[in-house]
Length: 224
Ligand SMILES: Nc1ncnc2c1ncn2[C@@H]1O[C@H](COP(=O)(O)OP(=O)(O)OP(=O)(O)O)[C@@H](O)[C@H]1O
Ligand SMILES: [Mg+2]
Image 1: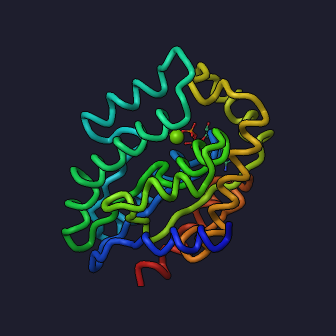
Image 2: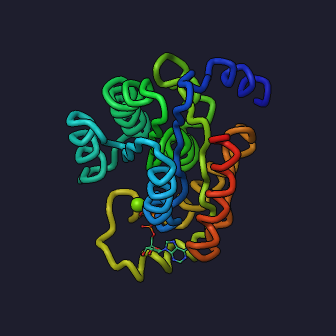
């Protein structure tokens, strides 16, 4: 298992984009991704970077249609069908938006969810297996990894608590059972172990200010 993950990792790379960076935020619902992205955008804009924030699935005209197809699906999708829809959206997003934007120096693309969510949701929680999902991503351009990923780590209890306070209707994934969420959290943690040089795990049960301070300090190092 370990060897084959190591083998699959060898197909992955970060884009070569002088002075430009590709970042992603990961974590379960309510972990604070949207909240923290606003802070990140401000920090980076103040430093003179062009910032493009995108969400997955979606971010292109075609991708937004797929987002609807997945999140509004009235029937459960086969995990492979689900996975391929996410990958189709992602390949288009890389081609149309991410890669062209990064070609201009001093640009930052921030992704609200990326490959680690697919690994956690479809790989772990939907039981396709991390290796299968890594295998599906190994061709260009899906094999491009962010320079840095912030994994906002919270417990299921904290997630449910924040979702209840936010009070929105539950979508396709939010209606899943506790076991699904336990696997999801495990999936993110496993990814953090597989890609320790890329993924920074942050205790996101802390206050928004504390979380953004950890990210700001880390960003200083990355941008330097
Ligand atoms: N560190 C924090 N402490 C307490 N509450 C927080 C914290 N971060 C975010 N929140 C609150 O929790 C809720 C969810 O946060 P947010 O929308 O940023 O999460 P998210 O990760 O983007 O969720 P989703 O995956 O559903 O989009 C919001 O009401 C937000 O104000
Ligand atoms: Mg959000």
